[in-house]
Image 1 (cartoon, helix red, strand yellow):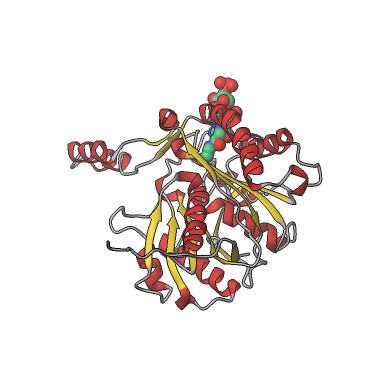
Image 2 (cartoon, protein in one colour):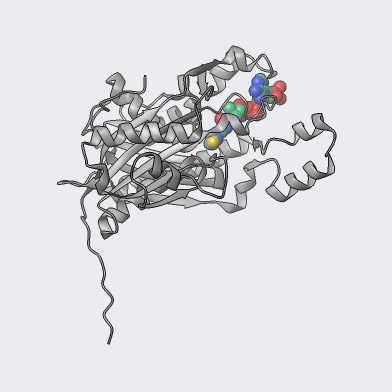
Length: 352
Ligand SMILES: CC(C)(COP(=O)(O)OP(=O)(O)OC[C@H]1O[C@@H](n2cnc3c(N)ncnc32)[C@H](O)[C@@H]1OP(=O)(O)O)[C@@H](O)C(=O)NCCC(=O)NCCS
């Protein structure tokens, strides 16, 4: 009888370090409204957004992911040679093939490690964090680098009223590894493919190629289909969120064995500050529990929004390393993922 070897890791895992990168170019609501039929007041009132950042100049998805990851590694104090896996949560890497994580690992000087992308929309960071924690627990990696990265500006239709004002670019990263006490709860996650069309690219790749081929030679028209732009039925997503997310949040608390009184900070995905304030109220979190509001100046950065929001809270002093935070990511899929975590220490090299 052949006996196949298994692995055994550490049950207690935590986020040991965090880093982020925010693109240099700040885009105000007024600038968005130079093309979009909207106003600064409407955008801020409905979404809580005043500014977002877009890549410019030499900045690329690759350079942002590497910068955020490098900062996370330095903040954690670990030897990068001990990283066993790199997980890149993104929906906006420029190519499906090759995927992004291997080149990011190469740039970080850790070529050769297991490296793969997780594509779960705005829930991507929560999914990747869950996989990373399970890897350390199972012993398939000692340390795992998790990066949330988005370049939403590359796939935006600047004239679309449902999406143009919402999204922004950025990257946030954490190192997940063994710790004395547990710092990452079981993940509560799920999806709703029945409603997946509520957040979707305008064309799939086949439709896009057909249209581009049919329109060859008429440059302005090709330009119109030149973007695999995202469309979102905002009110439909809002309704899904109102039903699904409160249940997810109470399940996270139950599975984590903590109560609302134990939560020091609430760091949900930065989709809309109205949704986040509503979730805090419905959950019965105390008035003085801070809620992440990175959306105001960063916009909705999809899979990057939670690590960026954690970093913002740590750098600005609204939260401290070691505090207990409730995380919840949600969006395309329609997918969600939530955890209770112990926050990592503030980054050594802040992104702003
Ligand atoms: C996108 C969102 C901010 C839109 O806000 P909303 O209040 O639902 O807006 P509606 O689409 O119902 O439109 C309300 C009114 O504003 C108008 N409007 C829509 N978009 C507008 C815009 N960009 N600027 C100005 N007016 C706009 C509509 O025409 C409508 O006008 P009417 O009342 O005269 O018909 C909101 O639906 C939302 O945040 N949804 C959830 C998004 C989300 O969580 N996504 C998940 C993750 S990525």
